[in-house]
Image (cartoon, rainbow, N blue to C red; front, side):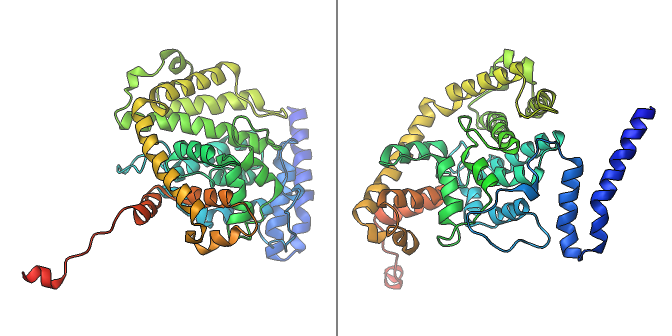
Length: 368
């Protein structure tokens, strides 16, 4: 007990020493400095401290109160691309039900899970939140079906994680971009399983993304009548849990137990294998099925027709995207425009281009 008390006393002295200079600062300055001091006192030695960011591509005046990662989070939340996520498909195209997930609610799910992971590991919650909120900004309408279509059409290929980076670097703020920090940009572009984030916070978001979409897509598939709960693979369910809540808790706990005090963020082998098997099950039963392929074919015809239309008549592009063709290849800019669309907006643009408009009834017609 004596050793424990001595350690606690030393820790208290260190925290007091870190915070004492704040008493003589302006309130606005002390808020950010207090955040820095708390991070130094309480974060893991493997955390990315806010004051140690590698910075932005373009220098700018720092905020008096917020850290750079907090500013990045706020910039993402107020971006146009973030607002559009509420009307973009997660799994089911343009869902009419009130309780199906969209790309926006998926993003919130990922943020919550990522924050839970990094908080348990004493990592930087602000950084993880910013990465999570920005990770899908470049996603297409019609979910991964739209991504596959644009990838097949563009000579440059198309991947939503790379497009998310292009959104924050180039497309937002009328072509000026959001000028985010290196760590947030790195986490966004590396959030896929194949990525290799430079920070542990980025690795946490990558895991949180897979945890979120597998579990919550199961709930949506059951709600849509595509799955029954008793059809879920029992071996994996016995490992992870019988409900979404239990499975998420099991995986977050596994990550904590296998990562605490280490320079890594990983899940235990048993739980990781169960997650991958459950993911494979979802591809077989939900993501790539005869019914989903029919819907994907419709999305393919729609996006392909618009892609060809704008490739042949680039002057029909909105003024902002047309201006981008002075700097970037036309095919890339068309993908910028098409991927920015929500599901409903894509249908509206397609109808405006290709569907004949009917004449409305006049007063004379009504009086005949």
